[in-house]
Structure formats: C-alpha cells, structure tokens
Image (tube, rainbow, N blue to C red; front, side, top):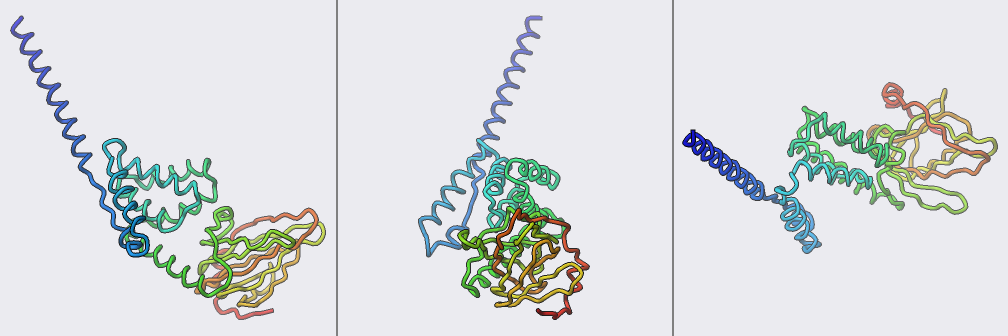
Length: 299
C-alpha cells in the first residue's frame, strides 16, 4: 500500500511538472507572437519619420505584441470599441475590423459587439461602424478588398475636397441613421443665420423629412460642388449644381442628396422660425432614387 501511495505521488508530481512546463511553453509562445507593422513608415516615413517609428515599433511592435498579457483578439475588441466611441469610421476602423476578424472575432460576435457599443457610444456611431463591418465580414468580400475600397473612397474624398472652398468636415455620425450612404458635416457658422457644408458620397441621400415651424422656418440650400438632387413630395426632382439655390418652405416633405455617379456638397442654411424642429421620416427607396437617372428638371 505504501509503495502504491509513493507511485501515485510520483505520478502526480510528474503531471504537475508537465502542466507547468506546458503553461510556460504556451506563455513563451504567446510572447513570441510579434506584431509587425509597416504602415507608419510606408505612409509617413518621409513626412513624419518619428511618428512612423512610434506607430510601427512602439504601438504595434511593443504594445500589441504583449499578447501574453492580453490576447490579440481582446486588443482588437478594445481598439474597435475605442475608435467607434470617438466617431472614427475611416480607413483606420476598417483596418482594425479586418484585424479583429483575423484575430478570431466572428460575424455574430461583431454584430453583438456593435449593438452593445451603440447603447454606450451612441446609435449613429454604431450605424456608421456597421456599414464597414458588413464589408469586412461579408463572405463575398475579402478584408483586403474592403480595405482597398475604403482607401479608394478616401482618395476620392480628398480629390473632391480640393474642388471646393468649404471643408468636407467629419463623418456625419450624429445623423447617420437618417441617411442612406455616407455623408460629412462641416459647420461653418452658428451666428446670425446658422449654416453648414454637407457633403454626400455618390448615391447618398437623406430621408424624407420636414422642417416644421409655426411661423417662418424652412431651409435654404446652395450647391457648392458636384451634382445632386432635391425633391418635394409629389413634384419632379430638381438637379442641384454649383450655384443652384433651393428655397425649402417650412412644413414641406422633401429630401436631397447626391447623384448616383457624383460626389455632392451643398451649404444648408437654417431659416429662423417659431417652434422649429426637424421631423425625420422614411428613407427614399431605391426605386424612387433610381428613377431619377434620366431626370434633368431644374428650377
């Protein structure tokens, strides 16, 4: 009996040592998962070499490589949550969504993550993030293709920005749920008559809506660059070109946005009125929008 007890204790000790050795090997392997990043040097090496070094060697080379302390999957989760909370929905979020997918976050999980984030960061920010996530997790679109598409949009946006004197501004996250497609907002002035420059990507338009007011009110649009549309309910659409002025009466249902094949920007002036408010309604359907292809009506 004593001999059996000694043998069992020896086996137990050997098993414990084996488990500890396996854990050490696993930890060592995790530490050896070095994250290699070259985006900083590739894009900013000549312009900002120190920033490029910090991005590639410190942020990714050291912080992201500490995956024995926090897994790459969890780091991706923290990063995309942080970016979305700040309203960042450009190519950087696309990249980190792509990495999150590589690091094991599934389509079901990202949908649940973004839904959860929406309650804390804001519903419009989640809407904007969902558009990018659909590209990355779509089985028919590879992550690299989504990244390339996003880079192409960024290039087009920069080119369009050079064609007008007003800034494009930031992604219109606060109103994203009222738009089909991506838009950008640049407040120009909030004194006397408030107005802003609104930029639409091709095919983007806002929902049907009404500028409600008991007296006065309404809105005025001035075309700045590109080509777009304005339409009141029950009336033909009006083409908006640079210099086109659209006077929108209060309490009239309407929508406006870009042409299908063109970026578009307009100034939006809020006309003062009594008890004014915007009433957002249903989206413009694809059938309604596509019917404008051959329309050339102007005011």
